[in-house]
Length: 190
Image (tube, rainbow, N blue to C red; front, top):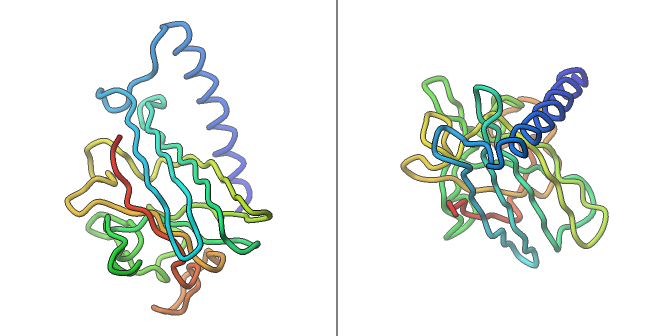
């Protein structure tokens, strides 16, 4: 399981370095899906919890890479599951965000099933102090148009859970994907 993570990290480092060299040589940022670099933002809120999630899509070789930076205050120390959810709503409660983002004819948005293969699955947020930050990159979603776009007909949200995502498939409502939803933010294009 560690090998794919190491390979992804190495690929991201090499890809990022290549993009930085090309960008500085060309004097312009790399373009995503022919439309330029795409940005999005979410204000994350919950009871006693506040934060932000910033999204940047950029071109990487022949595909796109979405970098997500999450900064949150008010969470209890420990590991917390973080997911992109299928619906861009956080009210009247966080259940309005629906299941995990997992489009397609074979998609399964059930939060506790099909793990860790949902398109919206992100790494855990490690909280060790009053503020927690994580920066991750994924090729599983896009901000630009297409079948993996977070901006489909009903939008998308980011949700932070009370417990760690165990990374395993479980029975519906078993809580293996992180349990209670503590904070939520609707993702909006900038």
